[in-house]
Length: 240
Image 1: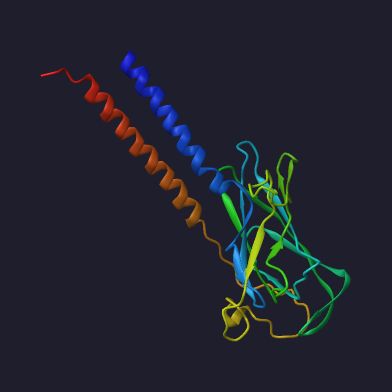
Image 2: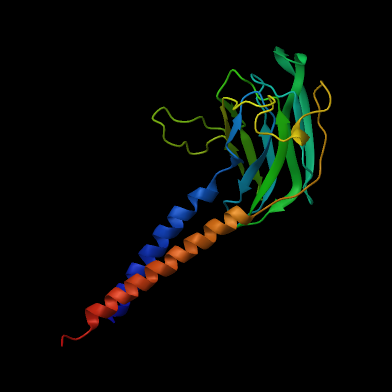
């Protein structure tokens, strides 16, 4: 019985460690990819995992920056979800190469759908022109659950560089690598007119990244189990 107890204890500890390492990678609301070029246009996805095992995510509200507003924002329709894009007057006009920008998208809200426990969803947005005078854009996001709980992902990074409890999705901006001035975006991401735009495009989504992480965690658990059982078996082998 002592052998069984030791094996069970070690396996439980190994499983807990592996799950603890795997879950944080999926836990926070993030923006993917996390980097884009200054002065260009880009397509990003707000990745929202469901962190509760007794409720579903039913609403996602993303606030857009007004200190560095984006003149062109379009959303990709997502089956089962309704989307509302809000434009508002800026505190003061912002000069752009297309003229003075007085209004811009301030908020995008997805509702009516459901992210079940153990699942995540990606909400895609095409946007630009990205500013050249800052190295990051912050998108505070509110995640609403079916039981009424609202998680506000709006914390700024801590002074010591560690991650905040509820970090806001942040897009890091890097200097443009050259080319046509549209950064990393493809030609299809660039706007056709010189005025703020909110135009839906075709829909698609992918869950491959989350699935790969979970499978990788499961594989690690299996490997640890094999090593533990093999080691305990050798210890029980009688001396020759």
